[in-house]
Image (cartoon, rainbow, N blue to C red; front, side, top):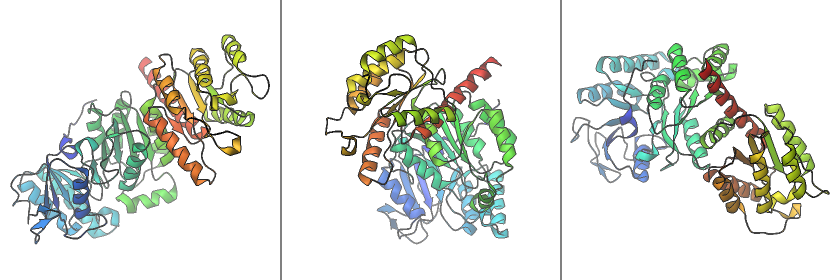
Amino acid sequence: MERLGHDLTRFFSPKSIAIVGVSREASHLGGMSFLSYLLDSGFPGRLYPINLQAKEIGGLRAYPSLTSLPEVPELAIVCVPAPHVPSVLEECARNGLKHIHILTAGFKETGTEEGERLEEQVAAIARERGLLIMGPNCMGPYCPSSRLTAWGVIPGRAGHLGVISQSGGITQRLTEYTCFLGMGVDKAASIGNATVLDSADYLEFMAEDEGIRLIAMYLESVRDGKRLLHLVRDVNHQKPIILLKGGGTQAGASTVASHTGSMAGEQTLWEAFVRQTGVIQVLSMNEWVDAILAFYHLPGPTGKGVFLVGGGGGNSVLHADTCIREGLDVPSLSEASMERLQRIVPVAGSIAGNPLDLWMTFHDQACLAEVLEIAYGDPQIQIVIVDRLIPRKIYHMPDMPDSTATVIDFIRGNQHRKPTIFIVESEGGDPGLATKGSALRAQLCEAGIPAYPSVERAARALVHLHRYHTWCATEDLI
């Protein structure tokens, strides 16, 4: 499809930034906090705090206006009260400053006539003066590789995830969540009311960005649904798009208006949007991150056949039931695989088959490696899920050397490996166990091996991954 082609590069890699409306006192969220965080991040460009009275702020020379600056900055962050925003935009235009992030709230989302009037004024100035505006009422751009991290994880982790979100809080949480699970963000845009640049503009930009291979979107509404539909369908072939849609219930939809000043739209229309575009839709923050984790690290599985490796007959039964309910298959192994398993699985206390109940896989890395080799060579199996128990006294497991690094090396070095993930359950109220579980999942994820806190969450993420690749294959045949 034809691209409209707004160049948004300067939002994410500016060489100079003017922060308009920086107070001399620390603030929870505003010009001073943005300036402080950019300094903490080691932003390499030039920073210009704008304050009518101050001579110096945060160790930097302050300026009374944009006109008084020694250069035209590449990006302006506008933090002044809403009634003063239009005059700042006019000053930006007069000085040739085109890329503007409006942090300030107090526009259409307030539900007041004054707020609507101000937002319409922002849109009119942008049209007349050719301004590219992110916001208003948003956290703006985030780019760890540029050290442009005035919010979210600071200084962040660079990677190949692109994020487009109408919620600053959700975007910040996502940068935390992904960072500590070994995934990096290339560029994130918190777009707020999206008065001038809408979600489609950012998607179009990220579609052409070679550093982005996967796109996560949080949307509550969209201005041009037809354009977004065609764009998502087009982009989704090359870069998977994982969509978290807010406002899907009556209560959620009623809150959208006071959040970004938009209408959430009919749920039936969004359901049709998902069907026609092949976008992966999720329903919660956990499901969003779980899907991102699978897409970030795993190739597309060639089928839905799962091999479940673990210990405990009851766990094996429940895990198989869960996988099947979520839409995966738990097939019988081939005769050759069964013959190999029966040679290593004791007759008493274990069950050879799929699921595999073999306690030794928890503490004997050589045994686990042999089991994985069998699974990787079985034509019925396309995905492997390994239950990784945390050693503790309640399971009569003595202290033993941690074999996680050895297991990671085996999986990463195996040329025949199939998509492999781990389950590390650590819920139940024990804070020590929770800490160990989080650390183990982080270690695996850092190595590029997705790890989940439950088989339910893992299975759902894998279904999303399989469904997407099946959709791509089907579309290629049309």
